[in-house]
Length: 338
Figure (cartoon, rainbow, N blue to C red):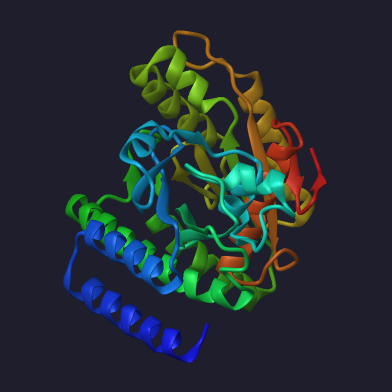
């Protein structure tokens, strides 16, 4: 980024932070993030793409250079390809010349082919909300050094969205997700942080088991929202019955659950993950006898991470690998363990 461009970038970031401090509604911040990045990099198109919490499909929340018709029809699954890896692991996508990576470019493009593009994850408090996309008709429009700029704008967008959601959650003052009767992530993450501190002080192990329901969308599409709600309530109850008194579990996303296992060694955590997955696979849910399986990722403190961010990222990466390997599997790091 050239010096005049750097100065303008700082002005835009300051403008956005001031808006973030004075406005609760995220839509205005989203608009400015897209507009200012487009002006900085002369983008052909720029978009904020979010994960719909109900359907787990991706949708375009705000954009420029993308037609209204395309935005309304855009309904993409959170796949295991390049975008899936970005959403699960946070690894940015930078394509300087689309002709050199035609398959990847085709999988991430929105409405039109591009010469170069940049995509970064939008996330907050270790939760993935979606991603920020920008493309150009020029090759090398985005450089490695520009990724940090995109990530800064993405964090501002994430904070705006989270701030609005936190305000709505505070109105309810609820620690429990009523569809599953598991903890909400905001409360769970505080508990996890406290257990990490204690594990460091006492030199004890601690594990996370993150799971993604393999056919969640099919359940919704086949039986409707009423059965989905009943399924999630029964699913949450099944998870709760597997826990020890000092374990805890939370709903992490529409079809994702995290289980915390304090004072546990790696083998115990892996065995627990296998047992939970087997219980889910063997169970029939709701009056429709719905069956399902889960893709599980295991992360163990301190081997797979010594802080909250790293251990959750390790678990998310393992879930991604389990999905990529065919689902209904338990992975730790890059290896199947169950």
